[in-house]
Length: 288
Ligand code: FVH
Image (cartoon, rainbow, N blue to C red; front, top):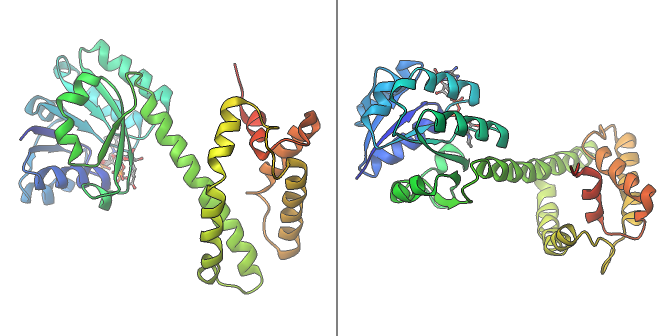
């Protein structure tokens, strides 16, 4: 069993601490607003009076606060004890945030692992939860067994920014799904339909269309968008225009769908008429 400190006891930090306690670890906790620590103390966690006291108490410290400015504010209070410490940051941020934070901690002599949690708090410790890691492989291997109790663990590489990049890419896929669902539901409910009744049509359709992703991924990776095209982008642009026109007729804002129409049109204007929809990626890539 290991000793772990958790800095930040919001919904996620609390779920992490509860799961570690359930697994028999020695858990030390700190939160800016002290009263949030009380239920965990009743469950067996030790309350630290400061971030420095918490970090000094354990082999591994996990930081999980609202954003990187908050993370920096917490660790700035503990600068004197960071050298030689293992720090895992599960706060959501950008790849640039992770690189900057990792460099700051390296300068203080700490070993740093960055992470992205692909789960909501009730999923922690349960099947289906995934945590992405990047940064120090030594720290990851040293604490692997402890981390595996929280979620399936996936270490993406030494480059510290990878976990946040993949975390945000996965969230981007999720928000694409949500925006599609919301726009489709607005159309259906504009005619008196119910979103719940529409799901038996929508879910199998989305599942069927997911089956086209390996082909689109191949085109994205090869930049060969004109190969084996079943549904060309010019035909798809007409469908996108029809969705925008139908939205206007039904009193639905076209805001989710218009960007896709604009990007498809941009590619066609550059000669992409016969390509697949994968060619839209060339409009959104801003290659350096
Ligand atoms: N909850 C979720 O569904 C998602 C799932 C995926 C991963 N995220 C990320 O996890 C980080 C923490 O999220 P959270 O759900 O625990 O967030 P809250 O419940 O809102 O708690 C926020 C904690 O941050 C502390 N905090 C805020 N500002 C400061 C500050 N300036 N200095 C120190 N601590 C700060 C706050 O403390 P307090 O308000 O209780 O004093 C909470 O402990 C986050 O990156 C998600 O994106 C969660």
